[in-house]
Length: 129
Image (cartoon, rainbow, N blue to C red; front, side):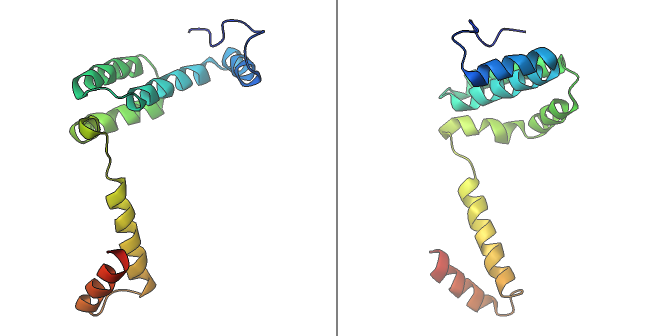
């Protein structure tokens, strides 16, 4: 693996601790490198084709490991690839919709179910509109 600090004297205390940890537990370094690589793919402002190339390289790196968590993550990506890659069209997620859905569920739970649907819809529009 690659060294994480060029000089021990210039490394911050957290980098020194990380180097010690990575020397003792190389699996943690491999896990860190893989997760950091995925973070870098999603944090950069890149186009969809470039992202697809980077993700393909990341998948290849995962196939070389024997870490079960990353194998599960790779399968999840493969099963939902089109939806996941759509993030790079306009860099947006469905977080706002999920948040609204949670608020509606909490509101419904607060009233222990919905008996009068018209009133529920009226009250929902007043609160969330």
